[in-house]
Amino acid sequence: MNSLYGRFGMKDIQTLSIFVDKDQLKQQGNELVTSIKLDDNLFFIEAIVDDSKQFEINVGIASIITAYSRVHMQKIKKFCLDNGIIIYYFDTDSIFTNKPLPDWMISNKLGDLKLEYIFDEVVFLGPKIYAGITTDGNYISKIKGFKDSKSIPFEKMKSLLIENSSLDLTHIKWFRSLINSSIKLEKSPYLLTPTQNKRKYHFINRIKIR
Image (cartoon, rainbow, N blue to C red):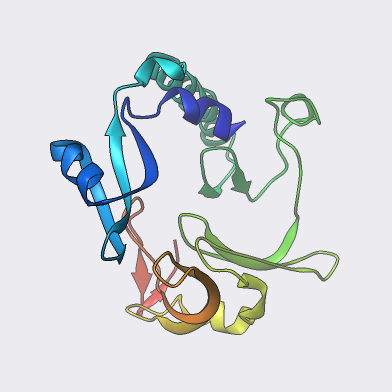
């Protein structure tokens, strides 16, 4: 669903990736985006093409969907605030609270909320970064951009509640090389740290409380 509405919001610029020789390379002029030399007379290039009408792009549709989603989530947050329900964390399509939401908000229908987890203990460290132990003993961990978030123990995730703390992690990522015609897996560093880009944290004795 996210992919569908995102397609409407694409930039009205398209590129073509092709193999060319020296003469064809010169013909590209200002339309050339990238160029990789494979040998003396062979290049792999990415060039802008004037073919924007091939895809149905409408930024207005993407904007309306995004705006409606924000309005919908704002109504849910206002209900929580008006009824004494504490909000621990929320995102574009999820919300974590200290009390159950009313039954009329919960269902398996498209557009409604669905109850996914009930936590005994949980920490929220930033947008799409949280971890916790559910009431049935399962460990849930989400770290945006990190391949194996469940490999990070809950105690380490909790250690990030300390002000200015971070974790130096590594994970396996795909790396491709057009010049060598290869794709390989390599370890890549990942610095995990709480972010305040969208939220302002409050600390007591250097421990994050909300």
